[in-house]
Picture (cartoon, rainbow, N blue to C red):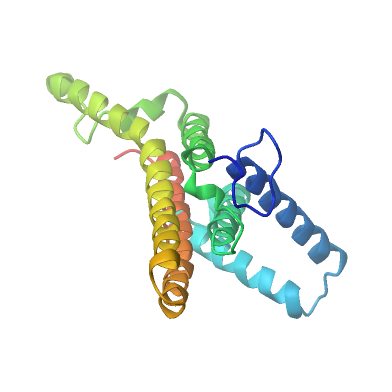
Length: 224
């Protein structure tokens, strides 16, 4: 199904790509509007945006500390707001949720994976390898260190997969559930499920952001 039933349909472009572009355009427009009308005492739309940004920054600061919050917040804040918007777009009739496609969720998870190891190497240099060797490091524990290295390596490689599949699976399940209930049930029940969809969209964006912060925090902290 490529484009069928959607309000916005660009021939040859999958719906998830079209609505990803729309989400980016909305975020850019929101940023321009807030920047052009910014006030010392926020009100209205600026107040809403600042509330969302403050919530994301506080989560980042509480999880990773003040020293690194400013470094990682641009990535974390952008991902959080983008994923939340994409999650909610699927609740609008005729719109598609880009995060219900694995390509979109993977494109959000891979930058987190790359940033995690980039900053790990940048902060620790060659000593970053200690994060993969387990708590016991001596010549007598060499077999254990080798085993821990491969276990940790597999765990790190799986992270972008779990991040992308978790978000994709939950959003796809919500999308299918809403579609089925809209066909089989009276008007009232799908409205209740839409309320559930609002909660699911918020929770899944929060989980993605929180796990991303924890991965980044683990990369820059000292290995124990």
